[in-house]
Image 1 (cartoon, rainbow, N blue to C red):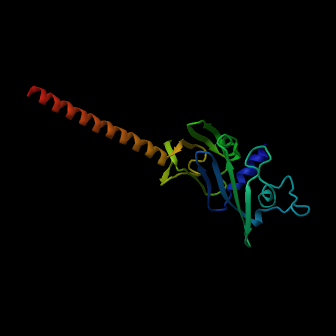
Image 2 (cartoon, rainbow, N blue to C red; image 1 turned 90 degrees about the vertical axis):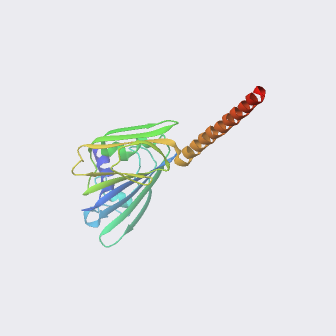
Image 3 (tube, rainbow, N blue to C red; image 1 turned 30 degrees about the vertical axis):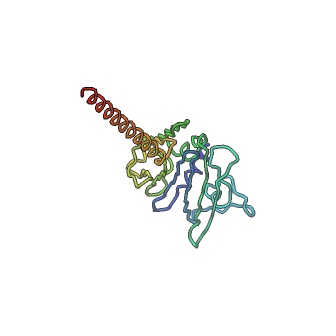
Length: 222
């Protein structure tokens, strides 16, 4: 099991640089998108033939094998690999259903404490404690969502993107928390607009009623 987590941890490897873990949260799915940079000099080429990967090789599976987004299961990331003289560039993508993300290897394998709540109204992600997958100078976790964010403790907010940075200063004491409603900002604005319109209509109706009532009383006095 330890080897499995180490294997996943290495997807965040960018030697001497910063790396990113990108997450897009929508009402009906959560999408992971990761860019991995692996130095060719770090690959132990233990393949017997073709794409056969040695079981003790921790890095080659990202180039030649299939990588699962789950701790167990047959699903695999959509993978694209390019290269130059010194590096392999690997992109991994996977769309989780709302109920699946709690089984993501990314949060289960990299964070000491991980809590994921999903119901008909919201998503809530809480990650804390030691972070086991810092293999570069720093890691930026970027969560983008068009939905309403009710609570968050992001280090930085850029439009609809919430950003946390993990580096040597907080790698032993991470704290990431966000609660996302399953409705978009547009839907919420629409609800507010409808409520505002109803209040306006009611206000006008009351005003007209009071005006008619006042005029009637005045006529009765005459």
